[in-house]
Image (cartoon, rainbow, N blue to C red; front, side):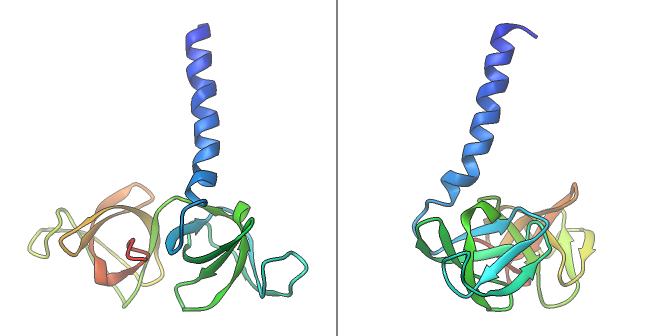
Length: 156
């Protein structure tokens, strides 16, 4: 590997490490997602506060509603609020399917062909949202889902 390639690779690693932190410094409300196999929600903004929930779902979208130091007050898809340390979160945009089985269309239109269907509770990466539809990717299978069929669509 050339020195130039090593320099570029090093810069990309530093940038990718910084993006989750940058995304967490935004002004609430905004969206984030869980980046660990276990993330503890606490009653208050301290590791000394009682644990309320243990989330075991990487990518689960959360709405950030307040910031206090390194702690974020979050709301989960069920409306439960509590506090999580910022290291448990990433700025990666995700959404969770709500309201039952949802069609994933080839284009941003309910008249488009259906690529596949996603069950309630499926979490996927969220892309651009427009005209009542959002790009939605579940493990490499992508398409467009109706925005009212997901939670985490960017409307904080």
